[in-house]
Image 1 (cartoon, rainbow, N blue to C red):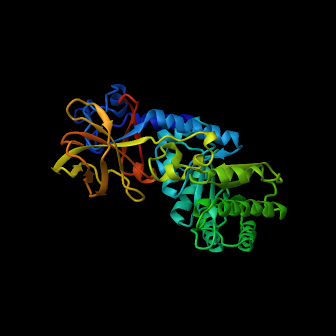
Image 2 (cartoon, rainbow, N blue to C red):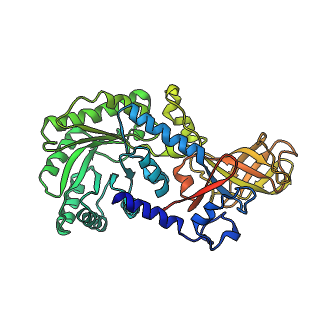
Image 3 (cartoon, helix red, strand yellow):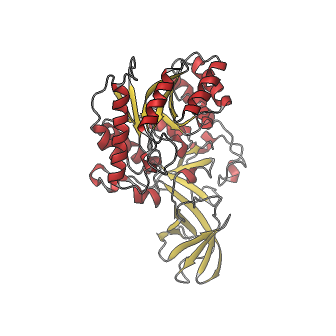
Length: 429
């Protein structure tokens, strides 16, 4: 049933009409469905697409999906990739096909999107204290016995608020929760000390609306992170699971959850979780990395754990933002028609990678071109030589930080290496 719901949801995306809502799509495609446009297999460069246009490499996405599936299997990890990166049900479906246990969310709105497409297993990496969201969640759990959701708790007050709202809503199933252990002094959310964690476990045991199923954390927040500091934090997390189990907090569970893992330290997660001793029930070692599906050309290219374990493979950057030179006022300066509304810029500026001639379509490396800053709709490009680019040329930009690339585009062409557009990825931000 869940698979049918997802398939039906994806069909609904293909049946959506192309119109002015979706930037960069060919004007002459208006009125076609997304599926009909995809079936035409137009070329990104001469098929009527307008610039700027964000392209997602079909080959790189498939490579990345397969690589992380292999990595998780090799290390005995379950995988719930963080869906907030892309918010794209088509990619969720691909992740599930590649062995994902479920999908991670950050906020209740994201859970609602996932549920609209029939996602049955969701890890909500946050404490939920919004009464409206909790009432909706209680109803969703009651309506679908096969729906499994796990969320964080990190405070006595949070437990109090969750319990009260769920009781008032007449919840028929307890919400499964994990205690979040903070990554260190000055880090983000989570319980600061193990003693406080035990207090929370006691409080959860005293209510019928919540069920403690494990522990979780996010090693990406370890202050001044080094392999040693990250490993030490993850060992604290594992020790907390052992302490809870020894104290009988996981009695009657079929499975105990221990979860961590962003996109920068999953090698440390794999190493530490491999040493987790046997507990009173089988352990679901749940990894949550999300940026891998598209990877990037700067931030995660620098941080990826595959730099430390190259024998395990390498992720491929999947995004290119194609923009056009619209002004060439001096021999040292050019302006592209893509800016902050189109390109991520919170971590790194875009990188000029390829120039495609506006005259004959030939491509060459973007040597001598440097993006200096972004305006809302322009990229300021420094050029070394008069002949580097001319008005009308297309420039491919490599981007940084997948989470803030996806959220600027509602419909993203999925493009094969030869420029053929095979599908369009719908996002929900």
